Structure formats: C-alpha cells, structure tokens
Length: 440
Image 1 (cartoon, rainbow, N blue to C red):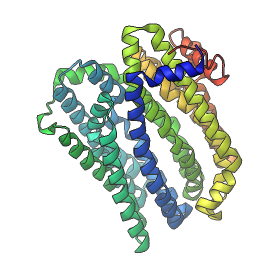
Image 2: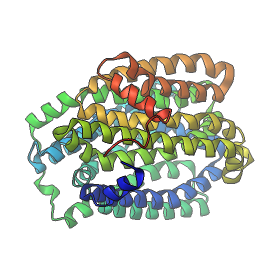
Image 3: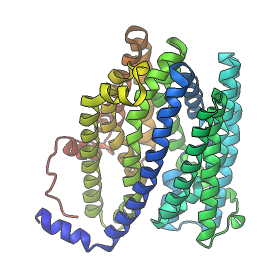
Image 4: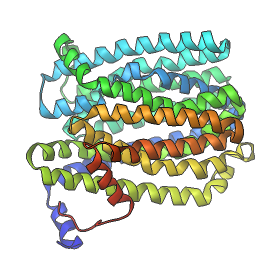
C-alpha cells in the first residue's frame, strides 16, 4: 500500500478524524499557553535574574520531588478505566479526586518539613510551602481525565487558555510595580487555581455535576493496587528529572541553578508534544489492543516513528541556534545556558519515546517494568551527578541527564523479555527502518 493511498484511507477513517480533531484542540491549548505564558516567563526570568530565579527553581524542584504523593500514578489508569467503563463514572471520578486531594495535603506537609529541617533557609521554606499549595487545585485534573476518555479536549483547551491569559496579565503587572520574589512564587499556585475553576465550569457546561462524585473504598483499593508501580516509578522519574537541580542548588549555588534551569525549561517546553499525541491516540490504542493485536502494534510503531521524527527535528534546530536563542531571549546574564541547552535538548528523543512506551506498558499491564527501569535510571543519574557536577559543573549535570534518559527510555527495554518488542520497535523508529511500509 503506497503512502498516497494510506493518507486517503486515513482521511476516511472516522476514528482518525476524531483523534485529529482532539489533537488540534490540544495543540491550540498549548499554543495559546506557550505563546503568552512563555514570553511572559522570559520577562519574569530577566526581571528576577539568575540568583532569584534559582531560588524559585529550587522550590519548584523540591515540590516536584514530593508531588508523586498527590498524583498517585493514576493518570493513565483512570483514562483507561473510563474508556473501558469499568466503574460508574461519578464513583471513579470522586474516588480519584479525594485520593489526589489527600495526597496533596501529605505533599505540602512533607515538602515544607523537609525543606525547613535540611535547608534551614526561611526564604526557601516559605517558597516551597507556597508552591506546594498548587497541588491542592490540581486535584481537579480528574475532570481532564474524563474529557480525555471522551476525546473532546476543546473545553479543557478553553479553560487552560483563559487561565494562562489571566495569570500572564497578573505577572506583567507584578513586574511593572516591582514586586518581590515571593509574589512570583505565589503565582504558581494562583495559576493552578484559575485552571481548576475553568475545569469545573467546563465540566458543568457538559451537563455534569461534581456534587455527584462519590468516594468508593473498593475502587480506591483497586486503583491503588494497579497504580502502585506507577507511583514508585513516578517517584523515581522525578528523582532523575529533578535531582540534578537540587544537587546544583546545594553544591554550586542558586545562581548556577538559575542558569541551568533556563536551559532545562527550553528543552522541556517541547515535551507537551508527545503528551498531546499520546493523550489523543491512547483511547484508539486501547481499543486496538482489545480487538486486533496486529492493528495494535502497527499503531504503536507509528507512534514511536512520530516521536523520533519530531524529537530529532527539534534537537537539531535547537542545538545549532542554542547560544543565539539564549542571548536573544534572556540576555548575556544567562550566557552559560546556551551550552547546556545544546546538550540537554538531545534527551528529548528518549523522553518522547519514554512517554509513548509508558502508555503501552499500561495497556499491556506491565507497569512494574516502568518502576524497574526508573529505579535503575535514578541510580545511574545520581551516581553520574555526584561524579560530574563537582568536576564539570552544570554541563556535567546535562550529560548525566542525557545518558540516564537513553538508558531508562530505550536501552532498558532490551533486557526484559516482555519489553524487548518495545526495544525493537524503538530501534526501528530511531534508525528509520521500514518507516512507510506498514498498514494502518
């Protein structure tokens, strides 16, 4: 079947049209968010300078470190259960909401207490506590899961876009009046509050009512039973995604952390792309797995192909223009960030593949492998950071992240029989093998 015929077939596929329509709304959401929030964040980073921006980044990293207790690894599992209609809708949404809410409270206490005891820095402790309150409002993400399961994301796109526009306006006002650092710290929680309000309004607009949500102890037990490997793996992922920033703050100082975080943000800003794509195609992949094994693997291979093409294109572009981009956007005060960006951006290839394969592991019920590979990734990342940061500074941290992502999201799959087919499919995608010679 030639490529032209495939495209024609796709255009006539109602399921494909549904996915494409949903992806368009998700991209609209992120385009508005990035188009406004991104440029405002540049203004904020320039305003704060590397030192104060490093303090903000350190607080965010600490909260992210403990946020697994609020997320509970439920994202993919809940969407799967909603698609399969395993439980009554109001019961599963209510159960997940209260689980996440309780987990958020635990996170606030832990993050604040640990920072106070180990840093003994009142500014960092206050900043961490204020940032952690954003997790309370993120409990309403269960509404997003419901919209994902229905493959109708335009309402969520509207909600987020409006929230980010309001937030951006407030940040600009804070800069103009010369506000202190703590106000920009508070904006992280205020922004998530606006998003939560938007989610609730969108949910009601679709003839739903959060007042009907019910907590079910049995559903909670079943969900946590399935998600515990994801909870542990999420914790491991957070460690190897954030431990470098925490170690830089502790070893080199907040100014160097500010330089490093700018490069990390410019690299990770692209990570919304695999999330959008996998979020949109995940329901179709679940259905294919249920009805047709060949169709399932064909769709999964196409997903891996797309991940590699997109990630490599971004990495090449950003590498050649890294120093120029940093100079134009952030100024010479952040000159070190250019070299970090040229290294860190290549980790995106493996991040893109990792996001896609994590969804596949959930479908195939081998979540325990996600945990195993994440733990090994943590060990590699921590050891490399301990060795490289004192010797090579923030460039060493970037190299450690790149190698860790390579191992966790790609090479690990080779060593387990259940994931070896995933390794082969990723290898095909990376080396462009058989790219256009598969049926849908």
